[in-house]
Structure formats: C-alpha cells, structure tokens
Figure (cartoon, rainbow, N blue to C red):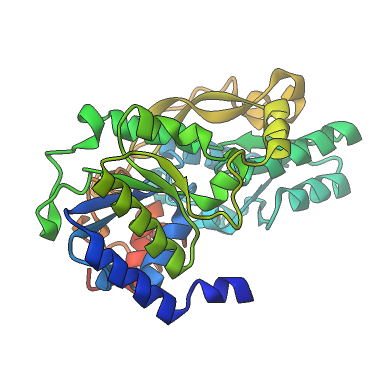
Length: 382
C-alpha cells in the first residue's frame, strides 16, 4: 500500500469521519455501490459494523465476472470445446459454473486448451508465437479494462496477426444504473425480502460510484442519476476514509435536499475522465445491446467490435452461424437477485452450504469482487 493510501486508512481520520456521519445523519440512507472493489473494501474494513444503523449498504452489479450472462458463459465453453483453438482468460473466469455445472476450469481438466493470462497482451504474444493456432481472448470487464482489449486489437491489426481474436463481453456501467433506476419507478423493489432493517434492499437513496471506471469516463455519464432520478451520487476511492467521506457527502446532499454527482476521488479521477482511453474505445468498439446476469437485456450496455476489425472478432468468426439451445441456470442460485440489490448474500438458500468459495454454485461466490465471496470471507455473521 502506498503512503498516500495508508493516509486514507488512518484510524484517527476514520473515527473523525464516523463522528461527523453520526452527527449529521437525519434519516435512513440506503446506498448502493456498483464496483466489486468497493464491495470487497467495505467488508474487509468491517465498515457496516461501525457506521450508524441508519445506513444500509447494498451491493449492485459491480462485478464484471458476476454480471456475465449464462448465455455468454455457454459461448465461452463452446469455444473451449473447439479443437485446435486456444482460449485465454482472466483467472476469475475459470470457475464460473455454466450450463450443467461445467466451467472453463473443468473444460481444461478435460483436455481443452484454456490458459489464464494477466493481460490481453499475453494472449496476443501467444498468438504471435503460434501463428497456425487460433487464439481467442475473453474480453470481460467494464470501461476500465476494455481499452487494453482495444489496444491489442489495434496491435494485432497492425501486425496482420490473423490468428488472434477477442470475444467482447465488455459491459458499460451507466446503462446498467439506468436500468436499475428504471425498475418499478426508480428501484423501489417492494416485493423484495427486506432483511433485518425493515427496508427493501432495492430501494436506493444514493450511489457510491466506481472510482476505476470513472478514471476513464469521468463524471458526466452519471448525470442522469441526479438530473432524472433525483438521487445523489459520489465517485469514491477505495480506502476506508474514502468510503466514509463519500457517505458523508451523500448525507450532506440529502440534508440540503440536493442531488448532484460529486467527486470524492479527486486524487485519481478527473471530471472529464481519460480522453485518450475513450478515443481508443471509440475506434475499436461500438455500443451494443448486451445481456446481464440478473438484469437481462440492457440497450447499448455492451461493446461490440466494429466491422473494420471484424477479422479480430471471435463472435463473428467462430459463433455467428452456430445455433445453440437456451442454457439453463441453477434456479436455487440467487446471484441475479443479489446483483440487483433485491437480496443479500445470506438470503440465498445456497449461501455457505451448497455454495462456498471452494465449491461455488454461482459467480457471486467465485470472483474476489463478488458480494457473496466478500460476505463469506469477511462478514460471515451478516
């Protein structure tokens, strides 16, 4: 941890922020974070046990591995089953249960050539070293990681590396937030199990917005949260003091009757974001409709590879003409409801029993950014 980040974990600073929160909160505040790093940070620091009982934390669809739809997992498994093809992916993708309980890890154990990489550049290098073997990189992530996939596609195009392709399963955060807010007149979720606090977990008063994503897109794309739905939003950092300060900013906006998008994470996020990264995305990708686990089809919430780079589009090259049945999910797994904020992890009947990190039933327990995994690891009593 850097010296700067250690400063934002200082106990004296955190106690001071907690005192201000307790002094200034006037009504219950239900806030949703939509970043897997925030999910893990909240539970790792034990913050729910420290802040006032008026504050309710809801985890939203902030884990990119978790929101990958079962239909897309089935497509990944289909690619893994191809002979003479190498599939490259991040480690979290290996253990996600797909149709019939099959995972990429199990497919590899059965002989599939599935390789874990730490960046898409590793997959590109492998393709260059094996020119006679198709190599497909699974592009999973939000606006933060998509520019790296765009960069390797451009590099492959310049090198005329025709055996390399990307299966773009990238997602865009703002359209998912709009979909959540559009549910039932603003995400009231009256039929949801209320849990112990007597308030529906899906009733969101304010948003803790993702710091990493915001380094790319800036603040403007979140404007509809305040302008159309009248809810405050704060782009926050990931240390305990960052999160507590973000909560204090939400409380103060609520007390003033204001709804704005504020930037707490100023040491990393510029209001305009990263123009170069967005230009890279715009050159290679175009917004497209996408499927989200728990949320279904959301218009213009994904990124598809533009026709100019069709040679590097795994969906066009390997999956376009394939008829496939609708995959079935485990109906007992409530990961989709948890991603929508309608249930808490421990309200899933499988949590800690048939579903644990060693034997997950759903992706919320697989990824280190999943809310079920975070609760299991850090807050098993919640």
